[in-house]
Amino acid sequence: MRVALFALGGTISVAGGTPRLTGEQITAQVPGLDGLGAHIDVQDVRAVPSSGLTFTDVLDVVAAASRAVAEGAAGAVVTQGTDTLEETAFLADLVWPHAEPLVLTGAMRNTSLAGADGPANVLAAVRVAIAPEARGLGALVAFNDQVHAARRVRKTHSTSTATFRSPDTGPLGHVVEDRVRILTVPPRHEPLPYRPDPQRLAANRVAVYTAVLDDDGTLVDDLARGRQGLVVAGFGVGHVAGALAPRLGALADRIPVVLTSRTGGGSVLRDTYRSPGSETDLLSRGLIDGGMLDPWKARVLLRLLLAGGAGRDVIAAAFAVRG
Ligand code: GLU
Figure (cartoon, rainbow, N blue to C red):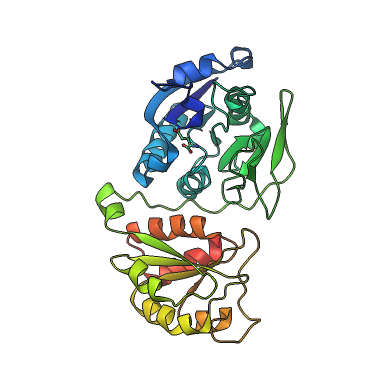
């Protein structure tokens, strides 16, 4: 049995000084990995903090992992920094076309610290990658012996090794000793057919505007200038101050504007409140319902769609299914 492992840097590659650990060095530090009966094909792709990763990096890894799976790998593992992992995992999930698991992981404590969690996370990720129970679940995040759906998972704490949580669903399952226990199987959507090239990605940028108390709203226009899409991280169920609603409506005439919640859990609403700046007001002005996607994941989906050439109707339909 083979597993393809792609190393992209992050805390899991930090040893307290420079240079960073390679993928081979990361896997060599994992007690018990040899005993899993899986040959790990390691590829070093990037060696960067995850804030430096790009959509193209992720799509290139997905393409390489796809090739590995097509050539017989049981699954694929990606090691990277945790800071952007909730976004990279979701991007990978949107386009991952295989039943074989694509499992992302990393570490919160680097290898020079007591209780470094990278080795345990790699072991769990490989266990998930080869587990028959994890097939058909898309891209997964294995961390702290939990298994999370890429679509639901968020980084919720700046330092805790239990930082990854799925506020709306909880984890899909757990790694218990040598077993992968999947307790919940989420609905799976068709993979998006978009494989935009770097130029099309570069030409399609999406900004996130976060609603804040007593904002005069001028930032909205500045943010959207030169952008092809905007995500609004609204208050609560998808609200902004009333004075901002006409500004957002005017923008929605020009570019796709997706409405989400800044709260970190739950959905925006569609038909409950009627004040200026409420969800019904904003949707009637042409904003697109982001559903249960948080602002960061909505931005990933919107940018992928735009870079794939989707127009407003296709974008709204995609959010209706995936939001
Ligand atoms: N937590 C950081 C990340 O997400 C690690 C920074 C580093 O690798 O230097 O990548």
